[in-house]
Length: 431
Image 1 (cartoon, rainbow, N blue to C red):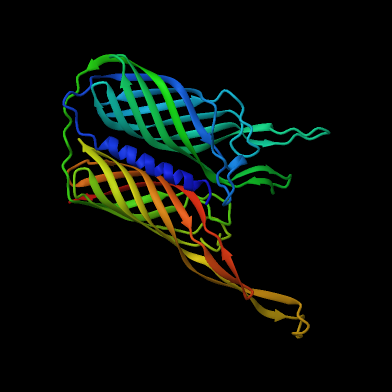
Image 2: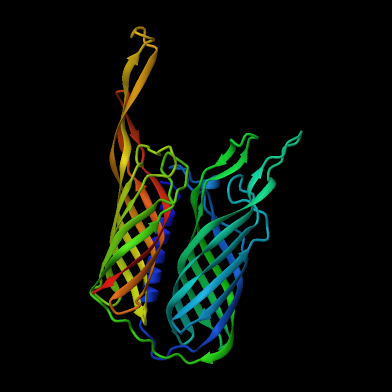
C-alpha cells in the first residue's frame, strides 16, 4: 500500500486521543482563564510524496521530519471549554522537492478547540481549516547552455485541513506551555503550468491530496481580565437525529492523476444511546467526474454510492456538540472495466477482406471498494428539535484487487490505497 496506510494508523491514534479528551468529566475546580492568548513556538511536519508504489520505502516516499520553523497562534477563549483559534506559520528556507510543494511554505489555519481544563492542565481536541501556500509551487527549468531548476517561480495556494489534539500546562496565571499534534492534509488540484501560443496545453501537473503529521510546541502568554468559569449547561440529548447532507470529497482514481471535488448529496442518521457515544451512519451519492471524458479504470469510475457507519464519541455543551468519529464503510462505483475483447473487422468500401480496421469492445460493471472515514464532527442545536452539522476529516479508500480479462488473457490488478478529504454540511431534526 502507499503512504496513506501509515496515516491510517495515525488517524486511529488521533481518534483515540481526541475521544479521551472530549470524554473528560467537568472538573471540580475548573481552571481560570483569560479571553485572549498568543503563542509563539516551533513547528515541524513530515514531508513526503502524495503516494508511493507498494514496497517502496525510501527516497521521496519516506516521510521524514522537516526542520522546525517558527509558528504563531492566537486563541480567543469563549469559555473554559471552548475557544476559536488561528495559526500562522511561515517557512524561512527554500524547499527543493523536484516536484510539487517547492519554495517557502506558508500555512494559515483557523478553527475551534474544545476539551477539558482543570488546575494546571488543559487537554483539547481541535479542528482547523485554511490554506497552505508555496512560493515556488509552479516552476520551470531555465534554458541555455546550463540548465537550472526552480526558475520562473509562481506561487500556488491549496485548501488545507487539520484535526488533532492539544495539551497545555499552566505555569502561572499568564504563562503556559502547549503541545499540538495533528493530521494536516492539503488538496492540490490539477494545474496547467504552461501553454503554447495557440492556447493548447504544453505542461500539465496532476493533482492529489498531500498528508503530513504536524507537531507544534510553544509558550503561551494570556492577556486581559482573568475569568472565573461557570459550569456550562449540558445540551439535552435526543435519542435520534437525522437529516440531509451535502458533501465534497476531493479524490483521484487509481489510473488517473486528476483531482476532482466530487460533490455529493445524501442523508445521515445517528442513534444517541448515551450523552457521549453515538452510532452514526451516512449515505452519499456522487456523479461521475466533471468534463467531457469520463474517467473509468479497473477499480473506479462513473457514479459512486458511499455508505459509512461507525461510532461518534464526544460531548454536548450548551447549544453545541463536539465529536471524534471513525466510520468504516464501502464505496461502489457504477462503471469499471472488466473485460476487453476484439470487435468486428471492417474492410474498405464493400469489401470485408482483407481486414483494414479492427474494433474493440469493452465490458463494464460495478465494483465495490472499502472506505475508512476518520475526523471530527461539530453540531449546533438552534432549538431542541433541530440540528446543524459539519463534518471534516480523511476518507481513506482501499481499492481492492481484482482480475480482468484482456483479449482472452487474465491479468491481476493489485490493491491500492488513496486518501481523500471528506467535508460535509447538513441540517436535520432531533427526536
